[in-house]
Length: 93
Image (cartoon, rainbow, N blue to C red; front, top):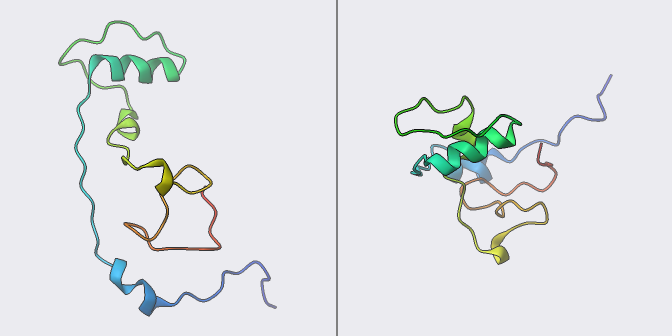
């Protein structure tokens, strides 16, 4: 019995240029960023102080890619084919 929802076979040779790639980004946690993150979690923003532990999950706010509007896809994410390989039948989840 074949699962009709199964993904098409991948062309691994076409994906080889992306194997082993890495990307490094740096950012700074500011008091404002910490307070904004707390507020986004519906927590009181308070007055974060330098040296306070960061709120769990704050790392998801750090170092978003900086991309010109023309380089964004319909979903608001950067076009694939740069750091990530191009994929046509894969939705963002």
